[in-house]
Length: 98
Image (tube, rainbow, N blue to C red; front, side, top):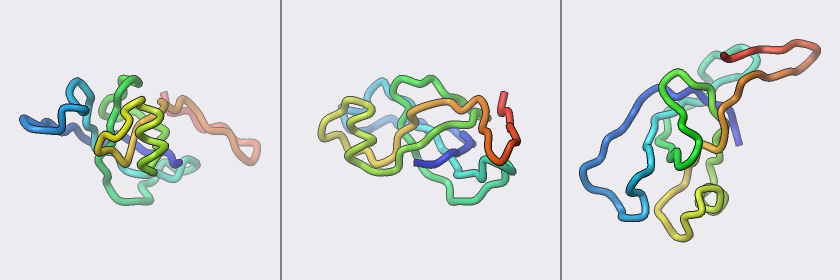
């Protein structure tokens, strides 16, 4: 799991039937204490969370866990958004994202 920022949207006119009705978002890993980008951009499925551009989100980047969190069985999914992060606390400091 890691924390990321939603940086873009993806539209698809053709996709696996198991992905119909799900949002496909571009996310990029951040360092939660500095909000600086620290990873590459990935495509993530948002099935139930309702994230949008600019949101800070919690990501699962492991196929089996991602599919399980979305209740998708054998769908072609590796990365899923499983939460919107409001704040992070560490070392006596709290960083708010909203």
